[in-house]
Image (cartoon, rainbow, N blue to C red; front, side):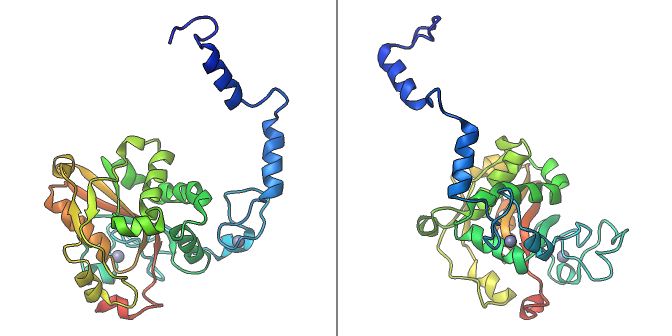
Length: 282
Ligand SMILES: [Zn+2]
Ligand SMILES: [Zn+2]
């Protein structure tokens, strides 16, 4: 194409441009108003109308159990009486569960507890019907995991088996990781293709810690050429929910084997063992 005063467009290109550009009478503000009238902004957790899009309604906001960031250094869990105080626990504090079952990753952070509105947000994202909330969730994850992200060379989502991605249409962990990298201005760190699920695993629901670990045995593998990119690098693994950590442990183990120099985790929601005590110890 020649670069001239008229941008070097030939007639057919100009005609194509005219079709893609809005006409002169078009007003973006009016279009936004029209879209809002047709699809009023709604709360991603309960679908009630909200004044602005991409934010929770007042009730869901109050119902979301945000974590203080002063809990366990490995998993982010808060210990009543320790995590909520002004000073919080010491920086290297580890919860009982992490001491009893040391995870294969180094440090971890989470945004909120998997309950109430937080649970509804996770489910909405998982089923892909509220992708408009990704930006909001990524902003929260960025705030919770800022030091972890700052030290990471690569941000890696927990992989999903390709057959599941086909039926679900997308991998929510990958979309969260992509959005977090974008929000942090670290798009280059997003590395979604280094790991893969080598087989489709059955649901983890109803399984205890040992059952979950067994279910994932050998299910995570490296993509061709991934070892060279992982060796000597600091990784941040991203997932939507942390329950016993069986999945993230399986992923972290593969990354360590490939020579990662550090492996941290950042998740959206933490399952409380108070609601499912069988997950705590077994
Ligand atoms: Zn709501
Ligand atoms: Zn912990």
